[in-house]
Length: 413
Picture 1: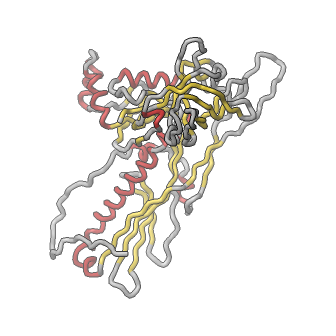
Picture 2: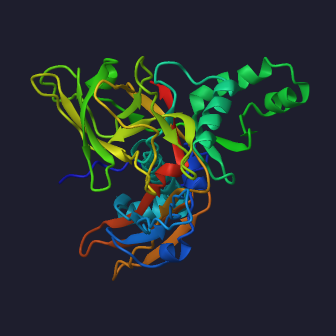
Picture 3: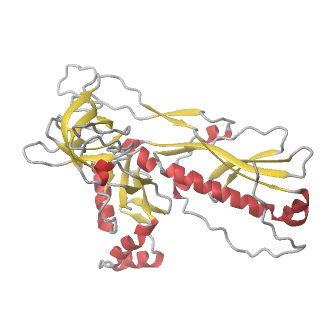
């Protein structure tokens, strides 16, 4: 396989321009929970897994007579399943006369490129590991009032009060700040005007990203279709794990995509479906929302069966989470294609980047870059008998987000 020719300046001396590197807003890497520091320092390979515990859930009984419930020790796994590398080569002459004193710049460029790839991958958790959301994918998120409303729904469900973080589209920040400047509150407005950042608002630290993930929805979401419940499938505890709907359009192979998000609609003659608070199991103000765990096609009658997360449980067990049974005739709507931000609390976004083994016999080093938060390996060597010197920067990582501590913020495309 041919390699494109190097583009190096053929001069004896040159001056560094001093131009800074163009970088992305790596807020997810910078704020992720890296409590697995010992795990990061161990040598690992793709597929290495670390587990962490989630708090157990309980229910109470209105009696002094014991009613034993299942003891569910909840855990979540973080799998190191991602890999990236940047490599380049020189001839001996190029290395000696052109780039020997320039290697720091090449290395920095490689790290920044790796950082952008890792950041965008970690941000995918906003789509894959959330089932609740704020926003309809049509109306823009452009005011402090909307941020306050999003936080209210987030906390109404139940939330950890510490380490509350929000991740916004960088394009939306200007309009949000501008909405604050139009309010008559001089001290706060001066602070906002001087920074032109959202910063801390309503006990939440707000960050901005230019790498928020895009989710492309199936046709049910794209077309704004209203689906009607036909039937449900239950697990052994009586929780709904999939729902069959009508109205999806006939024989549509792209009716529903993985991670499409849905919300039950309030309609006449049916009890409004609401989530129970995560702890205490009291009826909250949160409409019942869920995400598809697999793509689904509709049949010739326009029926589609959607596998969902979380399982929706009305019975009194420790996984109970909705106020009334799901019955035929209830309706849902899916989000259109959108860009997804995030609100989370309690540091539920985990990132692990274990060290890779040495590439014997090549000189190898593992290092951590403080600017981007990227841990990576670097090794180099010469091809035997050839005038070629190669340099490789690579890394592996895994990330996960605890769904119950998180809620997506939906920005229109």
